[in-house]
Structures are given as C-alpha cells and as structure tokens.
Length: 158
Image (cartoon, rainbow, N blue to C red):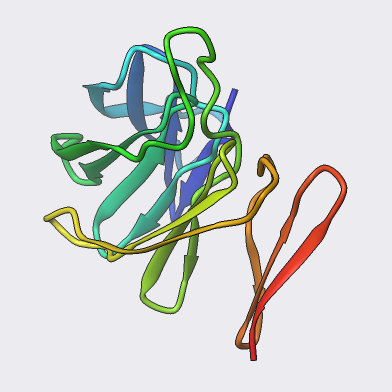
C-alpha cells in the first residue's frame, strides 16, 4: 500500500506483515540482497515511511507509529498516536510521515497533526487539531506548513 523508500542502493518496504530492507544489485544481471525482515504492526501501511539518522519511521492506518533501526530492522519503539482509530473505525492515518527541520509530522483522520522528535526514544513535541479529518500528507514551504482537508486547505506558520 505504501510507496517504497529508496536510500542509496537500499530499498525499504513496509507492509501489513513485515518491513524489509533490500540492497539493489549493482548490475542488471545481479540479484537483490535481502538485508533484513522485521515484524510490523499487523495492519495496512498506507503512509510511506521516512528515513532519518539511521532510523526508519512508519505509521500504520490504525496509528501505530514505529521506529526501526535501518541497519538491522530491530524495532526501537512502537507508540499508538491516537489519531481516531477505534474498533469500529480502523482508519486513523493515511498521510505519509513528513520530516521537516528536525521534527516528524503526522496527520490523522481526527484532524490531529502530531509532532514527534526523531530519535531512539519516543518524544511527542506537540498535538494540534483542526475540525476536519486529514488524509493528505503535510507539506512545508519555508516556515509554513500546509495540509489539505476534504473541503479546506490549512496553512500554519509565519
């Protein structure tokens, strides 16, 4: 469901069963090399991951946010971001993880934008909410954050 992430000659895939890192071959005759396979939250990953300082960050549709070590696939931590998923409504996160400056941004179906500091320990910096559900990925232009809701375009910043 999510778009693979390419960094150098390694491709990272996150899906509803496992995460993978695969080294691409150096030639058309070569074979890809699986570097690691990791267990993920048993859920769909619509959002594409982000790689930053050796950690791969991913969020499932139910809002399970994980950080994986990009070298070996070990899960560093997993946190529930509480972006509206319930037992009846499984969808919380469709928007891809966004890295801007030194922070990660997540948009949720409840209208939340959760801001997390990257690193080996989970640290939520902020949570902001608009009145509409958010399915699109936040983007940045200079000091401004833009996020599209079904009938609105929001801009935060200077």
